[in-house]
Image 1 (tube, rainbow, N blue to C red):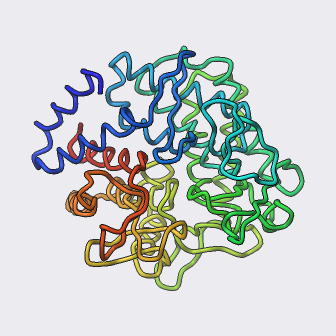
Image 2: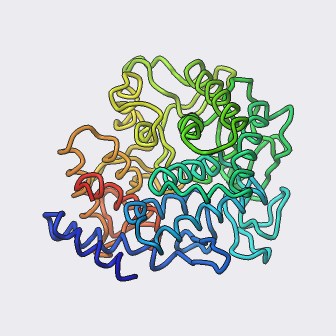
Length: 414
């Protein structure tokens, strides 16, 4: 850990009253910087996810987000800028891939039936992979005002994203993307010759996979489209060509119209709530997944306000037994995922619950829950068993550590 960051961590001890929380924050804050970040000679930053040595577009953005508060430190600014440049480079190689190799050595998770590149670790197309690049780009520029980051490659990546999202508004007609994996698990492959299940036109943009990397059941993933609307709107604040800004504004309106028309369902108990996925043909799923973007996280990533009536109804549904992935136990209650075992809660989802809560008491309660479920490791995990947190998945998962840090930063105004 470089001296300025070490000093910043030490200063946080004076602002966090609870020593144990301060110690956990320090441990988690170090993770991404000390164990997953590589500053490359070409000015880029390669950030692998932890125990998997590949760089996810989504994960890497979130892993480095807590360091934006330290962007006035030269080496931190250089690292953050490097993430933008690295992600833009990868998007230009293949905008349909979700995870990439440090070098074009052909390493991959699986020999899938899709159009691979030696740079690509995995090619599960997820709307959020591209959306989080825009999310991080805007957050970086807002914090640093660094106009030099808008290189030809970065601007080209933004343009590519708009083109892909427009193409995927009419997936069956125009998309070149196909993905099949030789797996007995339906969550690992797309049906219909790799095209996915049938959808109708909604104005939303199609996604093959959820942010859990599990296949969508229905391919208009509402939280991913919500994040897309948010980041497209935020592009208006960036020094980008007028043609890109105009296209982004139009696309945002089309996607948002689709969310409001097809993504809001009348629930007999909770009233009007957001569905998790729809197909534009009348089918929908009511649930939430632990990973971001989630329905629960909509106010945090800027789609709506916490006071929005449909969001409040949705939140009540999500944090109840009516959500099939909401689990309770002796050590806590929270949202899990089909990606992990039944009864396992995700710290990422708990952090998002805290970040979107309007109650300081709820935020503090979640902070305490997170502290009490590290199994003595002083790190967040992918998930833990609600009745026995010594049973957990992924001991080294930097994204979860960073989400804990974001919650602490919000509560204690670090």
